[in-house]
Image (cartoon, rainbow, N blue to C red; front, side):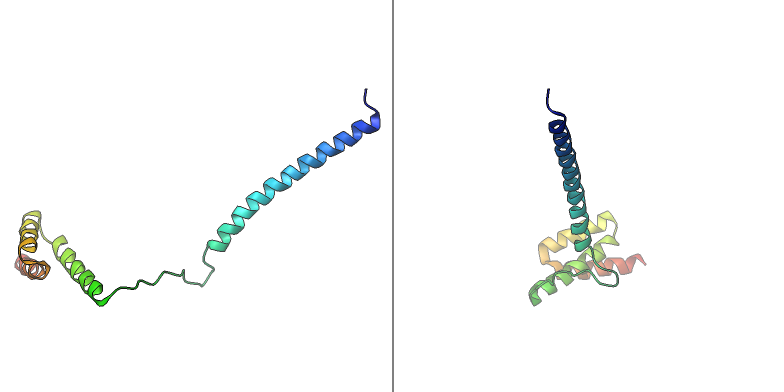
Length: 107
């Protein structure tokens, strides 16, 4: 049989180990919460967005694409098919002009 003193020391060591394990778990949870808080935007601060570096040619093509899609959304399926065929044949600018003329006719 172990001595009474030896047993109490072992119990104290086990208690300390459990306490340390609990502290480690708590710090782990706290660490993930702090990381999330650090990543979140602060009150009154706009979230930073990366700046797109677009060439003038790319900006122009995006503008044309937006115009094309905007006109296409307002047309029924049969007219959309006509505009798509014209785009393949003559290009985006001609397709936009044709889609505009079709949408004016609809009104």
